[in-house]
Length: 327
Image 1 (cartoon, rainbow, N blue to C red):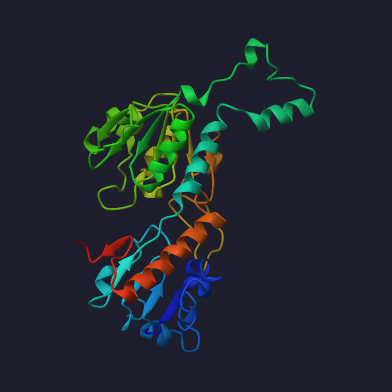
Image 2 (cartoon, rainbow, N blue to C red; image 1 turned 90 degrees about the horizontal axis):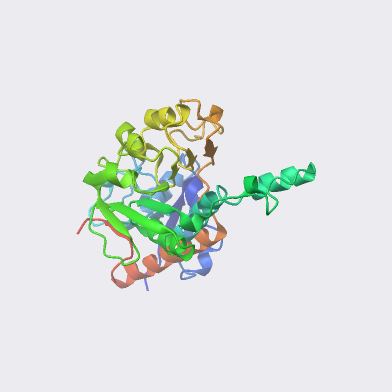
């Protein structure tokens, strides 16, 4: 069997490096490369690698001369310029994060209905705010709510299963038709205002593309129920930045839980605000730092996907999650 040079390029790919040698043929050579490829011999390793694990490829980088498989260790591949891939190179990505994200979404939704933290804080001050029997202590139930899923890929399907376990009604808006008996009502993307009005909480999990950038804008927020919640676990710019801020600042919707943003740290700036707008000042917003899918389970599942695809590629078998060349 051919032995391969497998290059893990950059800080993101390094998250999936530990223990990877136990998942592939031990004869393969695995090299660890920095984001800048500025270390001794790094450019040569990158150019001569048979398999590259990484999340970016642009014109400022050396061209991979030998790579037959370029594997993103994530779902998003928008930073990989496929025009720079050598002829015959295939591009695959990884999922495996849908279970973790679904748990995040359910936890975020539940906190609106089961105020554990506030009840604990109050009781520590001898305030029995949520004592059963008090009319003012009555709370709502998640199972009485309608959940809207914008997009119907791996993430939304995992959320759907958990929402149904809670007894929720579920609506979906998607580009292609939905054939799932668990979905209570389906919309196409050109029916977006009607979909946005259909639910008590909307979860956005669409990938970022030309067609989805800013798809949730002012019109979509106007259509939402005034007490509805929006959650973004897809890509930040799928929701128009200014429209989101205005809807929250003007209290035209009930609130938001945002995990994916408009600005991120860079190698030159380790910490930064997640937007040019002052989202941090808004009391009806819960902000998290793109954490929803990041669990040990996600790492293990993605490692296994990459290891399996390396073996499939060597054997000439069909690859999982093949993105390029497009069929």
